[in-house]
Structures are given as structure tokens and as C-alpha cells.
Image (cartoon, rainbow, N blue to C red; front, side, top):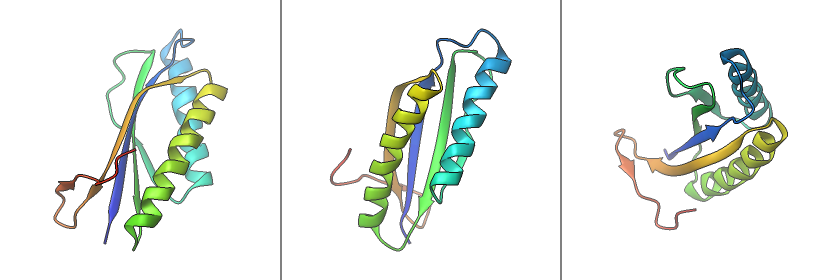
Amino acid sequence: MPVARLLVELRIPAAQSLKDRRQVVRSLKDRLRRSFNVSVAEMDETILWQSASLGIVAISGSRDYLRGEITLLSQAIARMATELGAEIADSWWEFLESDGEAAPDPSPQ
């Protein structure tokens, strides 16, 4: 069964404290979970107030469906991040095979 993993690096230039950072990250995670059937987790330790990494995972019976879902997710993350005062520094995604190994997508984003 195909699994897609999307990793997003965020910059939060307006964050002046850990509390500001947490508010943006928590809001983005909650909005993504409500809008899409995905799992979202913060991937890094809270070292810098103005950056964060999110990992998002989706599973489906169809690679084509997941490819479309990742495209929609990427667009939604860009929109939501802008609304929350953040920006996407980098993002990438891949399919994971059933044995846990990453498989390159033949048509990357």
C-alpha cells in the first residue's frame, strides 16, 4: 500500500519567542489535520524560534491519488503559512514502500 511523506521546512520571521513559534506550528498542524486525512508531526527540536520542520504522512490504495493529495497539501500549506506569518523555506516529498524504504517518485513535484 503506497504511503506518501511530505517534509516541510518553515521560516517564521515574526516569531519573537518560543510561544509565538508554537502558536504558528500548532495552528498549522491543526488546520491540516482538519482539512486533510493526514498525520502531521513536528520533526525537529525547538532550537530556533524562527524555524520549524513538519512531517506529513498520507496513505492510500493509489499512488495517483496520493500524488494529487500531496499537490493539494503543498498548495494549502503555502496558503496557510502565509496567513499565519510564516513562509516555506523548503519542501519535498516521496513515496515509501511497504518495507519502509523510500522510493523515488518518477514525476517529482
